[in-house]
Image (cartoon, rainbow, N blue to C red):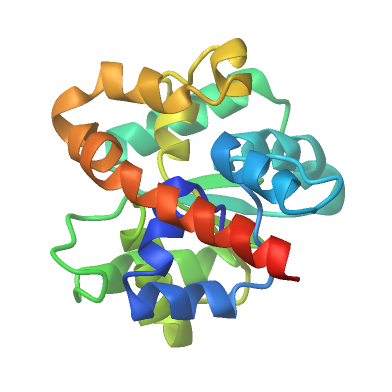
Length: 218
């Protein structure tokens, strides 16, 4: 499962490996107001926006009843523990419903350091795995290790584990509705995100134009 936003859309046109992961995905959920608006402009009806953070809440409400085990992977041990503690405080679930596994620094998505995490993940017998490594690393990580991963639904979930842990804050709801969540994140992490939003982000405009022109041709 992938959750496309503007950055993903740009990557799709620039990285064949990334596009391959998207082709493999069984489900694609919009995670970005600009993509939602574009989808509606070109004629898609009843489309909605779901982020990885939204999906965690949905899974938490049904995982216990359905016997699912939900695993978050990403970050260090302290972040994983904090995320689990906050989930426990927010949702009444059995001790084995949720788990979180740290991932060491990976110089590349296929770095051998992933093997230990995958071994631990396999022993947990997961139903759903939120891969919180940031895009495009998380999608390319799945593609690199797919043959070794235990059967489960894998969700590219970005900063979800940090939102769950409370080390990062999501934008207020009104900012999300207005499609300005990127300005919130840029204000919080300008040194890390300025290039993504201010240099790379404008490359989404030709995608919008092409999409609208193709709609008119059809």
